[in-house]
Image 1: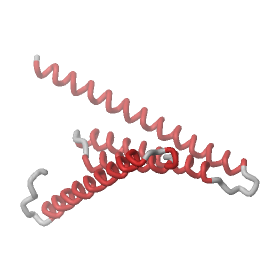
Image 2: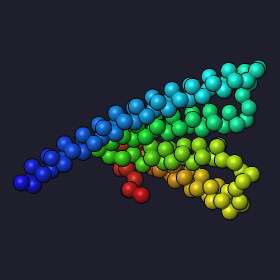
Image 3: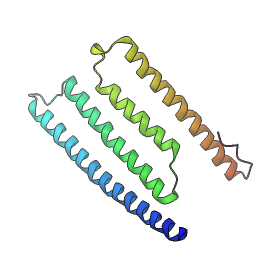
Image 4: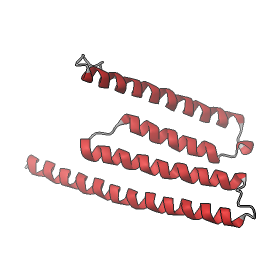
Length: 153
């Protein structure tokens, strides 16, 4: 009975993950089409085909949104292949999300404490990513060199 339930849960999980992959592919494709539309529309709308700061910020935000979607797709793909969530990829997704928010942020309307908090989030995510990638590289080197890998953090 337990084996049957576990098989059912495993099938359910695979269906959900494959659905997420399909939905993410559609979402990234639509976001890319939207980015192309915005870029062409903004270029054509200006007399000298030069973009203003607001248009550039909107386009950069969309670029990062597409990259965010691609990184999320990579996370789902890694989960599908290895049945594990890679913390390093999740940290990259978080950094891209915060970077996107910072790029489209209107600093003039923000108070000092909010800007400080955003800076602290960026610093924390950066340090966390550095430490995780450093441990990952050390483990990779130790496996290639047949040394004992460092303990889990």
